[in-house]
Amino acid sequence: MKLAIMGCGAVGTSVAELAGEYGHTVTAISDSTGAAIDSTGLDIETVLSEKRSSGTVGENDPNSALESEYDVLIEATPTTLNDAEPGYSHVVGALERDRHIVLANKGPVAERYDDLREHETESDGRVLFDAAVGGAIPVLTTIDNLGRDNVTAVRGVLNGTANFILSRMGAEGLDYEHVLAEAQDLGVAETDPTFDVDGTDAALKCVILANVLFDGGYALSDASVDGIQDIPGPALHLAAEDGRTIRLIGEVINEEVRIGPRLVPDNGTLAVSGTQNIVQIETEHAGRLNISGRGAGGPETATAVLADIGRLE
Amino acid sequence: MKLAIMGCGAVGTSVAELAGEYGHTVTAISDSTGAAIDSTGLDIETVLSEKRSSGTVGENDPNSALESEYDVLIEATPTTLNDAEPGYSHVVGALERDRHIVLANKGPVAERYDDLREHETESDGRVLFDAAVGGAIPVLTTIDNLGRDNVTAVRGVLNGTANFILSRMGAEGLDYEHVLAEAQDLGVAETDPTFDVDGTDAALKCVILANVLFDGGYALSDASVDGIQDIPGPALHLAAEDGRTIRLIGEVINEEVRIGPRLVPDNGTLAVSGTQNIVQIETEHAGRLNISGRGAGGPETATAVLADIGRLE
Image (cartoon, rainbow over all chains, first blue to last red; front, side, top):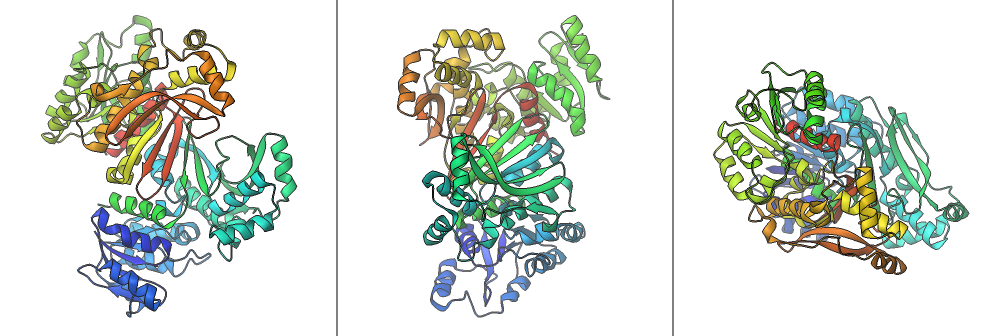
């Protein structure tokens, strides 16, 4: 397949680097300032080396990648809230050209799911987005496989940064500010970690899950969201005395979306450590499935993008 | 889809009971002594009540179900070794009629994978068998989704009976014979538990995984297999003092298939308890995925069968 990649952060870069291994050709790639385009296939090494030296992948207008020749548009620009732009318009534009879209960007499928599905019904293109929820964890594929009517609830740890902070606070008895600074030093937390620690990122993933399970109708404003910023260090100590710990748990249950810190058994399935993510899928007839793995990261998320591309062939 | 179900044990019965909920019609079902057939769709409640009262599902010859009108043959007769009969012939017969087959029976895909794939290439029918490995755990679907070239190893706990016995031996300090008797009382172990405790059942599942990962070439005779019958109770006690426990682990790694008792960290991911199963999939670019859930049981395995049927539509 010919791929046009919008966004050249960790995920976009990894998709470009791995595409050849999966038999695909990258015909366009854009970042916020420019684009490289070659309908016969870009030399990815050259493009990425160009970006390292000059700061951009190429001299074309970034949006020219949208007009290029491709089978699948990879939407890997940063997640934005509310109107979910510019990702949303990228998706709609590709659908209007009857092209497929694979999203790593959560915005369009969290904030404007119903609009997006409406455009999809009028197009020969399909929209897939397993990479947007849980990185390498194939949550949406597994739900699709089980049949959404057979799924009664989904819950899990869906933000690696928040989980790293809570794991360290619990294991070392350190307070939130201290561990956050450590996480930033290690590159586990971003300079502005707001969306990770205030629950927004996990909430967007749960909103996407709710849209998939209930065929739309949800946006971030429908979720009840609490973050981990105000958890005092001693709370984890008290939990530990009782054989428990605290995790930021997102849940989609009884048609409600809730995200917040919860007490969970210390050695229980939900108490994954470090940046691991876990998803529990409750089913009607097959009990509970637990899937854990790397919930973020360039190559991990790119693997999910490439799996979605594989389903379009 | 019209389904013909060969085998009316726990899995065959559950598939029949759940088929309607998934939009399918059961046109034939057979057990070892008879068959019920109705090309317009059987009344499952009546058929199963007939089996409860008379001991058989119907008065037709069991093999007549194979000649009936159906889109998908569900092969849920007991797993047999070596020639994998009669399951193997059921599969080949359905392929010769260009019908699809979904297997819960491990024999044909463990012992005669290459022969079966050869018949499949000459047929319009496809053969799917995710229900044969790990019950409700979507192991094969996830590998297919990742792309088998991206999978570097698979390991896990693939037999719930053996895991129940080891969990109880570890938690209660009881010896093997005592816990086995308890498991038989609870219905967790069969009257003849040989294949569960000697590693054969887990080995067959790993052989199937090897066939999928390496495109065939494996049978049970290629696996190195040790069971749990000879583990002395004190071994678990000694392991516990070291923060570890013992689990029956199956592995497919470096093109080898090995099954045997292994020391694993006591609270580690592989130390699932009771009848739970877990599969770890090591990937090239996406780290390790862990999937745990119910590895056996009628409705659980039937859910996997119905997911496979869904993929054929």
